[in-house]
Image (cartoon, rainbow over all chains, first blue to last red; front, top):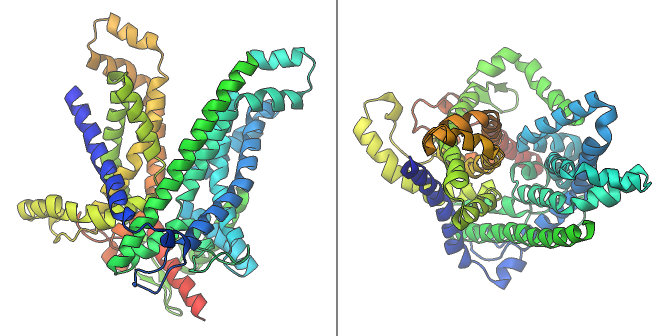
Length: 274
Length: 253
C-alpha cells in the first residue's frame, strides 16, 4: 500500500513538474526587456511583447483587490463577530457565499457583460475589475471568517473586561490579531483572480494597446497567453510560453512575498499580545 | 449575489422562452446564425458530464492517497516541502495547464496512451475513433491534473484535523497502519473528503479556457462524444467560443 501511495505521488508530480519545466524551458527564450515592455507586434511575426498585458493585469487585479478585499474581510468580520443576533440571516449569507464560490467564473463573466459592458456600452477595465472582485469576495470572506473564529475568546473577554467598546475590540484585538490569516486569504484570492481568463474575455476583451482610461478595454496576461496559443505560428507559441512564465513568476512572487510578510507580522503580533 | 442570479436568469429565460426549456436540454442542434437560431445544449451537457467524470475518477483516489501519504507517512521535512509545493501548484492558473496540454501533453497522450489503446482495443466502441490528441479523454485527464492540488490541499487539512486519540485508539486495538487508515481516518474524514471532492468537481465543471483549448470544439450533433477519443464541447467552453464569435461580429459592425 505504501508503494501504491508513493506511485500516486509520483503520478501527480510528473505532470506538474513537467508543466513548470516546459514553461521555464520554452519561456526563458522569449524573455527580454523589449518583450516585457513593448506592445504585441504584427500577427505571427514574433516581434513585440506583452507590455500592455502585464500593465492590464496589474491594473485590473489591483482595482479588483481594492473592491474585493475590504468587502470580503468585512463580510467575514460580520459573520464571525456580529451575526450572533441574527442566526438565520447569517446562515443564508454563508449559504450564498458557498454557492458563489461554486459558480463557474465564466457565468460571473457573463453577468458582468450583461450588467456592466452592455450598460456602459463598451468593454472596460472597470467591468473586468468588478467581475474579478466578485470572484474574490467569497474566497476572502470564507478565509477571514475562519481565521477570525480562531482568535481565542479569552482575548475578547479580556478586552471587554478592560471596558473597551465592541468596535474597538473587533478592530484592535480580533482583526489585528488575525492579520496574517486574513492576508493569506487575500493572497489566495488575488492569485486565483490573476489567472482568470474566461470572465476577462467577456469584460476586458483584450487589445494590443496600452492603458488608455478606465472605461476602455485593456489586455491581460491570461488573455494574451490564450490568444498567442490559438495562433498557428510557432513564434506566437514561444511568446505564449514567455507570457505564461511571466504570469507564474508574478503569482508565485506575490504569494511567497506576502507569506513571508505575514509570517513576520504574526510573530511580532504574537509577542505583542502575550 | 442576488443581482448575479437575477441577471443570469433574465438572460437565460430569453433562450428558454425561445426554445422551451425541454428542447434546450435535449436538443442537439446549435445554430447561432441570425434568423435560424436554435439552441440545443444536449451535446454540451453530455460533454461536460463525460469530461468531469473522467477527471473525478482519476483525481479523487490520487488526491486522497497523496493527502494520506503526506499526513501519515511523511511527517518529516519531505512532507512539509511536498505540501508546500502542492499549495503553490494550486495557484497555477488554469490557462497554463491549457497551454501545456495543447503543446506538450497532447502529443504524449496521443502517442503513448491513445495509439496503443486504439490499436489493441479498437474493436470496442469506447476506443474506436482514430486518436487525434484533442478530445474528451485529454480534457478529462488535464482537468484531473488541474484539480489534484486543490483536492489534495483540502483533504490534507481534513485528515490533519482528526484527533490523535482516534488514531492511537485504533493502534491500541492492534490495527496495522493500513487498518488504522481504513478504520480511523477514512470514516472520520468522510464528510470533509466529500466536501473536497465537490470543490474539485465544481472547478472541473466550471473550467473554461483549459477545456476550450484541448477538447476540440465540435459543434452540434458531432459534439456528443461517441468514444473516448472524439472531439466534444462542454457548457462553459461553448459559452466562450460563442461569445468570441458574437463579440467580434459586434466589433466589426
